Image (tube, rainbow, N blue to C red; front, side, top):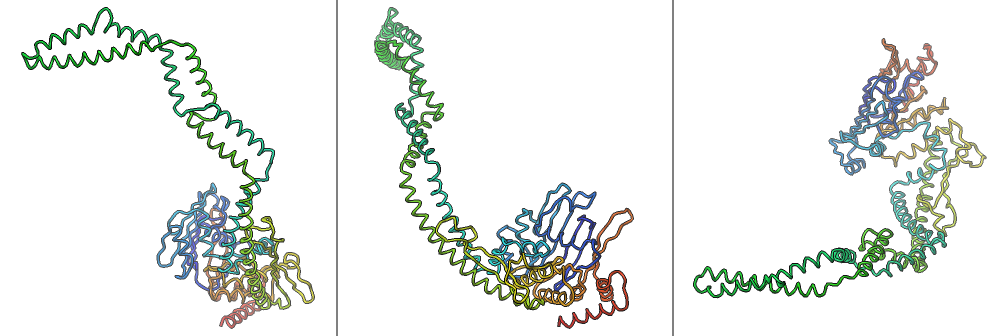
Length: 566
């Protein structure tokens, strides 16, 4: 239940803090005083759509904060846990700021949350019903979700299982459909892939080929420089200068004296090693020079091959390795396309099997809905009789959309359509709700539905925003008693213009507005005492002028209400 609400700079409310209690609380006041503004504030606090227009003129932001008490058995705590929100002593604080630029900041127990999270948590705390819900009731699209909601956990589990199977089947259906798209385009794609495969295969690329060719090109372009360098080095060792002969002589001289001194032995060994190394390298240089042959046509071959590789790189990848990876990829795609009929048969077989399972789950959900509809019809008709619609007959109907032979017959919400019908007079046939119900009848039907749904709605507070429109007299009294009955198990708020409703209240709040000294309008909320309740109910009966007769009538209403409450 909502314990306290604080509103700052919201619409024409400058600052207002309101404490609430359990039971039935009514809001009354002159038209335009701001009764609905209080409900708008609660709606935004629990995740409703906000805008900069809600911010009081001249202020940078509006602030709304509410303190809620939640019973220990509430499912809300598991939801809070899933969002990582802490709580203590069953208390939940919602806070929302709306800036003059339209931006919102939402908090739950001090933790920043998204508007979606705030809305999900708020839906577990407060259930708001007003003229908008009347329009939803008239919309056939809302009827199936209402039936599912009445079905509770059983319908929820069946619908979740069906939806899971529906998504699996939808993916297979999508794949099957893709096989039938544009056969000519598929044929063109196969031809293109085959051409690319042949072009890459014909090239006979090797992973390290480009690097090897670049090295070879570098050598061929530097042939003359390398040849002269090697030839000069060789001639220096074996040519006229006889570098090796001089070194050989040095080795002989050192060998002849190495036994005289140990240090000379080290010199002799080092020079001998150098000589043998140079002799071996000189032989290798001679062999290399003998093999060297300048072939201009070889350079042309290398450059032509590199050019071919460059063209393939431009078309298929940044390197030979990526070109080869691309080749594997398009080979797989070509094979899949060429064997698509075989694959289609496999996917279609899987689709038919999944369709069979989907049909079973859809029919199971449909049977559960039909049982739920029987209970819903009974519950709502029972409530209608208590609202002086004793001759009215409400009937929710479930029908299958079409024969369940193809996936097109299925929807994400099942295989059914639902519609609400009603007959308000004896002998009249059932007709769609939107075509038969008057404003007053619609208010009573909505209240009957809400009362019937109370057993499956897990919220602590219910708000009725002028749902008594278009009713009076004994019907108004019946609606007042029905709403009061809801307050026995939930905290109920009701904005009303009916004196019968106000008389049933456990707590009566009066909404008024005044113009301050600086010529600004501000809304205030005041809790009424017993004498003030009589005066306000009297005003609701007769208008602005209070007479002894209206005061007497107001007292009688209050006495009657006390008897009903017992």
